[in-house]
Structures are given as structure tokens and as C-alpha cells.
Image 1 (cartoon, rainbow, N blue to C red):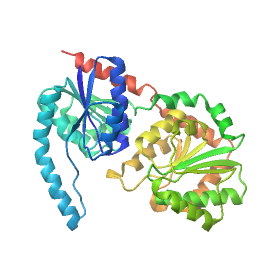
Image 2 (tube, one colour):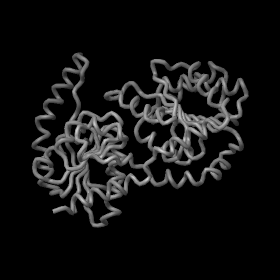
Image 3 (tube, rainbow, N blue to C red):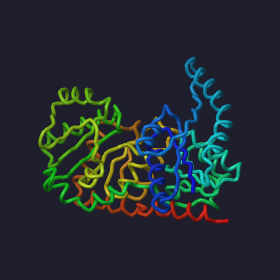
Image 4 (tube, rainbow, N blue to C red):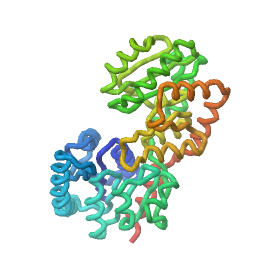
Length: 375
């Protein structure tokens, strides 16, 4: 069996695609899996590191704000769009796939559409509660639509062939969840509340700013917490300046990192997570069963992080603070309220756990195998 997976743009599209590739290989070790994407995108590095053949197709999105630079970018986008059809057809001829899967990003559009027109079996996976434009356009033409949450089903527009399967979560997330006590002991957490905060690999300025206010409050009020914060690449100097300005410092109660490279372990140890609301982050919070304060990024397509976050708030698993309402004082009062209510964080964590689809990859792989084997 030959499989072609198209995904690009962000890790939120690419990591589920890689997880699905692994599940297909587990179900059928003889499967030959190829990826399609942009060489200039994150997908090229992640896919080639994983050892899969990579096929380049250049496709970008239109810029809605009018400026001289954006007009130039839109002209390039039109050119790439005109070439994407012939490139996708050439790719089909080269790979000769039995199955084509789109996992989001602009690159999925021409690849999956071309496969569907040729009668090749097709499927898409939507990670967010509010679907992206590409998947909404593709849904009517593919054989199977996978949705992460029920809220996305009607929005995708093909409920009769949509299966709710959750978001694929790395196996190590589940493994580390069972080692919570040992990991907390290694961190020296004791009976303290462990707070984990981050704004993404590059960092989010507003998240860093309000977390600094929270850290200053924790130290001034001598709160029994162990706070672990990741500044992101662009937040290192900013956070150091905020430490001096607000009078707090890393030490026994605060660990500051640029990047968290052991996220499954720290999620296992945490009692409360403060983060953005990317689909994969939320899937891992659900898998670990962790309470959260979610600050959706306003700088994403269709404001999808807000809709993702609201699914957890509705379930009593998270508190959502929109960035337009975000301040240091707001974050401090929210954390203070949660800490003041015994058992609240544990209850929120249990609610989060009920949302997890632990067998997401098995569901996806089983459906894909049945699709390919159906005459």
C-alpha cells in the first residue's frame, strides 16, 4: 500500500500527520508512506527527520490586509496556485498512491483535490473545533472526514461521512502520566502546587508579561508553588528584564527555561497549566487530565484557538481568558481563586480527562485500513 500525506504550516498540522503515518505503519508494516509539503515550511524538516520521502509543492495563502508587500505576496500566491494543479498531478503519477490524506495547511488543498478527482481514496483530519478553510472546501469530495471534536462536524459540512476521533497524542504522554509521583519527586515539588506556563516555542510577549506578574505575586505572597515557565526563543531577554523590573527571580519556587523539551514529564507533574490553546496542546492536557488557564492566540486563522479553548471551559476543565481581557491582575486573581478552593484543580483535571480520546490513532488507522480494503 502506498500512502501520500499532505500537511503543512504549523506543528499542529504536521505532528498529527506524522502520528497517523506511524499508526499506518503499525497496522501495515509494508506500507510505503510519502509526504507532500513546502520545502520552506516546518514540514520539510520534521518529515525528513522522521525519514519519510518528501515531495515539494509550493502553495501559500492570500493576505487580506492591503499593502504593497501583501499585493506582491498575493501575486506570488496566484502564480503558485496556477502551478499547484500540474504539480499535484505529477506527484500522483510519481507516487501512485492508494490513499491520500490531508492533515491541514494550504498544501492539503491541491494534493487531496487532485487525488479525489482521480478516484484515489482520500481522507482529511481536522484538528480544531472551528475548521480551517482548506478542510471545509475538501470535505464534500473526500471519502472520510476525521474531526477532533463534535463541535467541528456540522461546520465541516459533511456529517454523513465524518467520524469524531479526537487528536492523536504522542504515546509518551500517556506513559509519563503514570509516572506522576516519581517525576514530582525528581522536581522536588513535595506538596506544592506545580504551575506550568508557556506561550509556544517562539514565545508570546503577552503571555510572558502576565506570567511575570504572576511570578512576582507568588514570591511576594510566599505561595506554596513550584512554577516552571518557558519564555520561548524571543522571550528570553524580555523575561529577564521583567524579573528585575518586578522584583522576582528564579530559585527554589521558580524555574525559567527558554524551551521545554520534556513536555510529557512536566505535564505529568503539573497541577495547573497556563498556555495558548493549540489543538495538540489541549489534546495533551486532556490525555494527562490537567486543569488549565487558556489564553487563545488572536493571531490565528478563524480565531480557532478560542473555539478550541471554549470546549474545555464548557466541560469545566479550563478557564479561558481572551487576550483582549488579559492583564497581570486578571491572571493573578484567576490563579488565586483556583488555589483558594481546595480540590478545584483536581476536579478540573478529572473533567479534562473525560474529554480525551485515548484510542484516537487506532480509530483513524482502522478506518483508513477499511477504506483502502473496500472494493
